[in-house]
Length: 631
Image 1 (tube, rainbow, N blue to C red):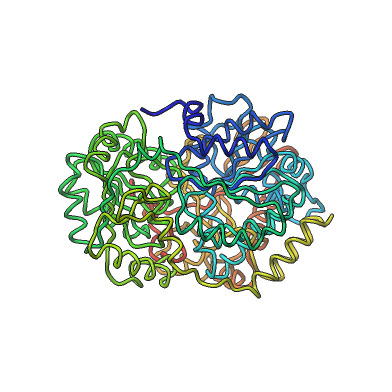
Image 2 (cartoon, rainbow, N blue to C red):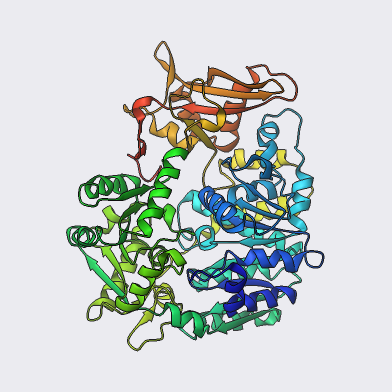
C-alpha cells in the first residue's frame, strides 16, 4: 500500500502540477494535505533542476530530528550526491555545512546563518573576533545556485509568529527578509505546507514578487473559504501579473483518505479513559503542549498500557532512538505514544486515535495529520480508519493553563469555533482533506481562516526587516551583522545558541558513544538560577562556574579535558539580559582559547549534566519552566 516515491509522485496530480510549474520557470507555494508526499517531491525536483534550472537543491526543515529522518529514511539511497547539515552527527562523511552536495537537507537555523554570511562551519572563528570573516562566499554561492525548498513552512512562517513575542517577531523579520533577498537574486523557491493561513500566504507572496520568476499557488483541494480568500487577495495583487492559483482536486487521494473524523472536546479524565480502553488492542497517540505534562501522562499510562513510548526534545540521543524504535513497534501493534509538539512535523504513526491538549487550529491539524498514514505496515489501521473513522479528542479546561506555550487568545478562538461546530455534530471537521466533500462537514483549512490572527507588531518588525534587507543586499561582512545583533540585543533565529549537554558517565567513551541532549544555552543558564541545578559547576567562594568538557581532535586522535566557563552563573545571566547571541559564543570560545591546541585541531564544547539530573527514558529534568524550555 505504501507506494514507491516515484509512483507516489506520478499518482498525486498536485505534485505533478508543482513539477510542471517548476519546470516552467515558476516559484511554487504547494498547499496540500498531510500525508500527500510533499517532502519526497525534492527527489524529483533535483533531477529536473540539474543542468537547467539550478546546480543543486537545499531542502530546509525546522527541526534537527526532521533532518535526521528525511536524510536517513526518505532520501538515503535514492540520490547519489546527498548531504545534510545540523548539529547532529548522523554520518560524518555526508555532513555538508557549505551545501556542496547536490541535494542537502538542512535545519532552518543553519540555512539562515549561512545565508546571513555566518557560515556554520566557521561561526565560532568568526565570532571570536580573530580578524576572520569566515569563508562565506562558498556557501553563498551554493545557496544562490540552488533551488530552495522550504518544507513544513507553517512552523517558521506560521500564525504563532504573527503577533507573537519578541523573538517571534525577530524570527519572522529575518525569514521574510531572506525570502525577499532570494527572490531578488532569482533563486528558484518551493514552499510546502498543509496549514498556512491565507494572510501568511500573502506575506510570503509579497516577498516572492521581487523575483523574475512568476509565483504559482498549487492548492490540492476544491473551492473553499481558504481558496476564495486567497483568490480575493490575489486579485488585489494582479497588477504584478505574476500571480496565479491552481486549485486541483485529486479525486484519487480523496477516495483513499476521505474517512470519517470524530472530534470531541472532553475532560482529561474522559479522554484518558478512551486511551485506557484501546491501548491494549491498537496504537493511540497522546500529544501535550509541554514536556512536564507529557512525562506525567507517560508515568500514568505506563500502569495502564502494556507498551508505551515517550518523545520530546530533552531525551538523550540514545533514549530518543530507543523510544523511536518503541513507537515504531507500537504503530504496527498496540500501545500508547506520548509526545510533545516534536511529533507534529513529518512523523508517521499507525494510530487512528489522538488525544491532544488544546492548541491553535493549525497545530491540532498537524497532530491529527499523524493519524491514519498510508503505509504498508499500517495497512490494518488504515483500513480501520476507512471503516470506522479516526478520532480526535481535545482536552477541555482552563485555556490559560492548557495553552501554556501558545497564545491564549488563539487557543480560545480555536476552542470557540470548534465548540460551535461540534455542538450537534461530532463528525463536522475533516482533519485530512483541505476541502470537505461530505455534506455537513468542514475542512480544518476553512476553520483555519475563521480563527483570527493577532496583528503583527509592525514597528519592531519593520526596523529589523529593513536592516536585514540592507545587510543581505550589500557587500557588508559578518562583523557588521554581529554589531547589529549586539546593539539591538536580538537573534537571527528563535533559539540563541544551541549547546550539547553530555550525560554522565562519559569517561573512557568515544565521542560517538556520548549521550547528549541539545539545549538552548541561554535558557538552561536561566533555568539553573533555581535551587534545582541541573549542570555541574566549579565552586570558587560563593560563585558557581559552569563546568565544560572540551573534546579536541588532531592526527593522534581524540583528547578530553575538563575546564570551566570563565564567568560565573549569576554574571552570565545578568549579562544575558542585554547581550545574547555573540556573548554566548565569546564565553564558549574563550574556553577553547585558554586550552591551547595544535594547528589543525578543532574542539567541541559540552556542558556537563549532573547524574541526578537525567532520568533514563524520561530525559533531562529541566522541564519546570515550560515557556523557556518547551517542545
